Amino acid sequence: MSDLAFLKKLLDGVAVEWKSLDTISKKISSGGTPKTSVRSYYGGDIPWLRTQEVNFGDIWDTGVKITEEGLKNSSANWIPKNCVIVAMYGATVGKIGINRIPMTTNQACANIQIKPEVADYRYVFHFLRSKYEYIKSLGTGSQTNINAGIVKTLAVPIPCPEDPEKSLTIQAEIVRILDSFTKLTAELTAELTAELKAREQQYNHYREQLLDYEGQGVEHLPMGDERVGTFTRGGGLQKKDFVEAGVGCIHYGQIYTHYGTYAHTTKSFVSEEFAKKMRMAKPGDLVIATTSENDDDVCKAVAWLGDEDIAVSSDACFYSHKLNPKFVAYFFQTEQFHRQKRAHITGAKVRRVNADNLAKILIPVPSAEEQDRVVNILDKFDTLITSLSEGLPREIKLRQQQYEYYRDLLLSFPKPEEAM
Image (cartoon, rainbow, N blue to C red; front, side, top):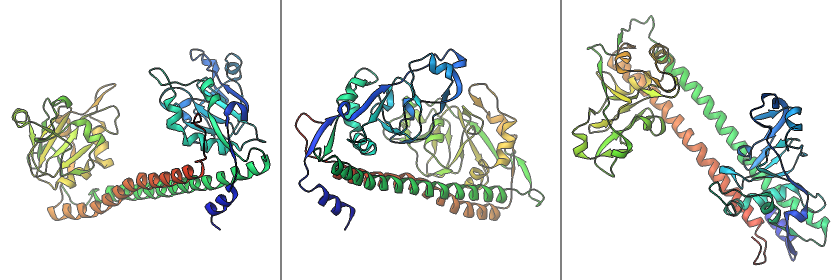
């Protein structure tokens, strides 16, 4: 007999009573925040949970720890493990979690200690998780906050209330099924993440090896050498200049958020009139973001492989050259390039490398046949990594949808009009 068939038989003819959290809980409390200006209150060994750490799952640790002094001088209190925690403030309002270790929390967490003789805490967790959008809708104010009073009134369906033993058996079976979906999703995520990491490491290794021509008689030339190429700074293109259709353009910020190693189409466009005033990159040019908030990202580049000239924004430049475009793009991803780049980075909060300094960086210039060979190998790795990177969130989403389908099927009890 399948899980669902067994559960259907178990639920056959069972009455359901909707009970508020206040009636099925031993205690519902909120925590507190030690004064952040007192350094001695922080850095201890007492786990202290913030609402941004409540994220639909088990909570085994906290990002911040407080001291005994901090605990004594705030309204924070210890809560036992296996409380159902509801975030009541900010972007995470309505999200649900379970603390798997004793801990303290801030005042924006509602900590619910379920009566074990009435309800399974994981059953309550799964049900409240299914009502995330509803709970979130109860919020008020610019941050859509809720409070402990609202949390106490949330209703939970308790099957077979007149027979506590049977009720807990039914709840436990629902929990077992839903936990199994959660576990499968976590295992799949871990497996795919590990596979992606391993392939990325392999890819990085081969890229470094393939583009390292030290001692192989391959000439290394400054990128600005006339035998190789020239850099041109981008123009005054801003996001407000975008139009629905027209001449393709690349804004420097999109190089970080949208583009990979190469591109055949642009995400954005400018008008033909605007493009006439712009500096235009040609097919085969490399478009480079010359500013970033960190050293690793600055000079991220994309090879433009489209058929038309495109506009390039300021805080970027483009490299016109005589090499295989993808070969140059892959070179920009190597430690060989980054090692040279670091010597030219300037700025404090915003890190920059200008076009004149990029022109000084040495690039290996093997034969055209060798460049093609390297590109063919790295393209295969790039395709694999892209496939895994895109497949990971897609698979996770499918498993999440599967969990939600069975959760809604299992927890869709008849309810009175006034119940949520």
